[in-house]
Length: 534
Figure (tube, rainbow, N blue to C red):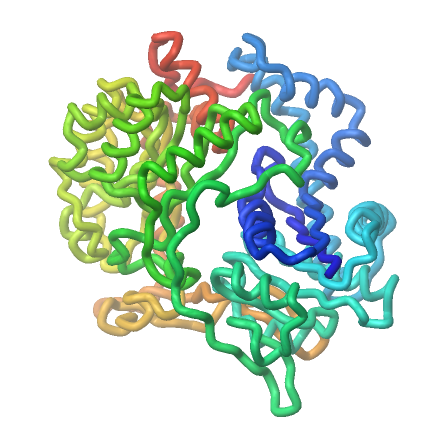
């Protein structure tokens, strides 16, 4: 069967799509004679935008050259002005794609981009076209591509299927009802579903598939969770590896699926997975070594939701024992398990950056969200990580339910105490998701749910996300808007580098990893935030 897997705009052009590489590997393991083509339409559009920009080639030359110039912050910021203009153009295309999907309003520039991407997709005359939609920001362009394909090929002899993490972040039944161009949707893990699709299995035997039937929308059950495969988990060979906007290759990999902790009451990510499982450490390190040798890649972005300290210690020890020059980023919870000795071992093994789920400096709120962390331990762990030479990014959530001014000032105090050990802070507003603890307990927590966020309105049909609009209800006054945005604004005004932009926190993840590695290898002083040039 001839199939094409597509990663649509708009995502970062630095990101190599792990989903496509993972599905490609699963097809190879299936052992059947299939023809599979991978199309990174996201990168194709970014490259087109760069080609159309008068300074686009200068930007690409800068990003593709692994030299001291890339690691010069002023040079980086100077070239980032060009990138900002490309981002503006990409955002404009996404808005035009939304109008094309909703109102059938054509646009010459959009159509030109769609045409070039669709030509790449159709070059193998596929019978199956699968879109991997990782972010909701990719939805409009995905549907525009599907609509353009149907316009060029109205016979409907090709099946168009949507999958990816974002399918759990929206109402899939609404999407299927509103978009006749789409034949089916697979929320959740997709290897078994894609394998069945490629075998041309009967619709009712495709695991996890949502599709139309005579009686309405049919939703097949998923298969039980299977163990993660051994080396060869992801095959990146079908992707344009020299085209990504990085001076050195950076690959995303996973040691585990789902979350080891899985108790945070605000989190909706876990709905995408079939259950927690992890690889054997030796097999995972085998995979890193295989990718390192086959693709000449040394930098890896661990895309796991959370890897436990004991597993990271074993991974680090194995990397050191096998003398592999691997450099990596990981996401962690700041627990006392991260002792100075463990952090030092991780740094020596190549850990260059940790994204810490700190969320708040209020112990009351940490207990409420069931984070399992202690404020004093957070401080100690972050300082110890910096002492080990690891770059720290603090992930914070402002506007958590029941939060007060006292809780906010406790968060400010924690960040003040940590400022010398942090290279970046990600400050986000609390988002209420369907089916989470906070959605189920909204009334008790003083939240009034106003309905789901609308993503699209196609004719008389609406498509909603799993994000819920809400307002806060007070006993002593009228309902008020969520305080998250106001808290973020107050933090930005208070932060130690007032009116300045942090350099590291504005980098794409791949560039952050490269910079943190360069910082470690050069034994330089921390890359504290600096002002953007006027």
